[in-house]
Length: 106
Image (cartoon, rainbow, N blue to C red; front, side, top):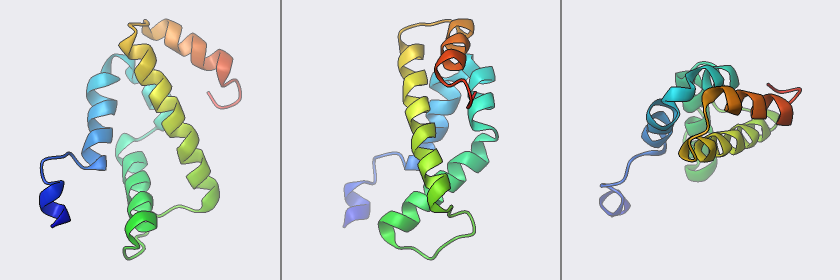
């Protein structure tokens, strides 16, 4: 029944791919620096979320608690990048803002 209820919605994996590709495409350099290989990042994030939410069989890509906290920070960065992109900030300014705000992480 829940499959039918949510059948018309994109999966988390597809949503993240669309965000990284379509919304943040013009900011590719910044996004690549922050998230590395998008497929690996998305797979680990989605597999961990599915395991913690649905108690599925634990795949090899489920990450430990410290990396889960890093995912929270990564998703926070992703949201900030989306807001900056939506407001029309040029990539150079976005990189400058990220460097100034996340000095050790960028």
